[in-house]
Image (tube, rainbow, N blue to C red; front, side, top):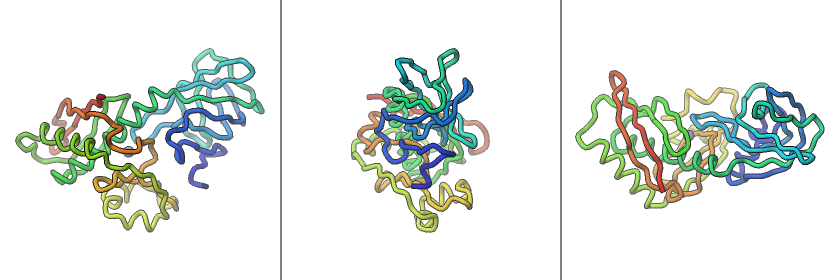
Length: 244
Ligand SMILES: [Zn+2]
């Protein structure tokens, strides 16, 4: 699918979020970055940080410490590690513990986004995540009494309900016919994008999103609303932690 191509790299993680190892051909390489023919490393974006992992080639190990998206998708080797020359076939592995934690955390943020919009009508203005901890910013003029407890309870009710989290790729017009997508993404998706990847927490929240997610809300685990900060007029920052 053309939308899964970045530069010359086929992005495997968009179609298979559970893929953790794959083979690929090195197309270009330097200590600043390695370009592969195909990759399941999430390169970062939408608040979700890049994957870590390793490339194995000819008995040598190159640790991958991150990624950079430019004209090509560059995997960043750990400082001082040997870099495979172009033409080398590598076996690659994505660090599973980190990625799986980030998938749970990213899905937790979508649950939070869905709950806060449904119950309080507040829109998201920003967000960021690390493994099992995240923040999301909302435009919410007043903090109602019991807000923190109410949001946490509602999020965990959605986890318990074990809602399906579907990934779909839709033509632009069809995607923007979904009311939730209009709410969250109309201004974020460039005009030139013809297909839009949708993350649908069925019955709760539907967003245009390029990140990786778990398959159902129960896989997220418990969501704790750790803190609510007021950063200015109507600007509320919610910090969450994801547990088992
Ligand atoms: Zn997202």
